Amino acid sequence: MPERFSPDDPREWLNRAQSNLAIAGTRADTSVYLEDLCFNAQQAAEKALKAVCILHHIEYPVVLQQRTDNRSRRVRPKISIIGPR
Image 1 (cartoon, rainbow, N blue to C red):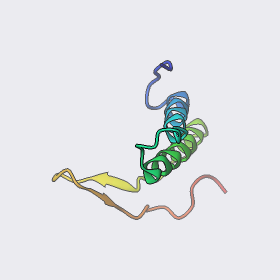
Image 2 (image 1 turned 60 degrees about the vertical axis):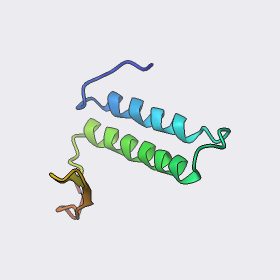
Image 3 (image 1 turned 90 degrees about the horizontal axis):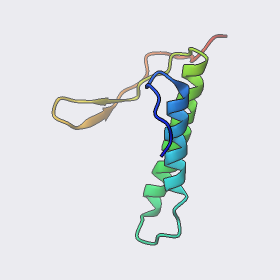
């Protein structure tokens, strides 16, 4: 198991990205849906990008919010450009 870091530490997000990538690489298990593997690959990419944003102090948009009825909904980010110009 990888070392745990605080959520504001980019190493924690890289660890989580590597974990998702490891799950995505389990194609040998035929009981796993292909779309679930793709989801984990997408999550790995997203978490790696979040680590880069945290490292460089770049604000990143939240695109999924939890509602009070425990259903998620997508929201449009309120920023048009991420990072300095």
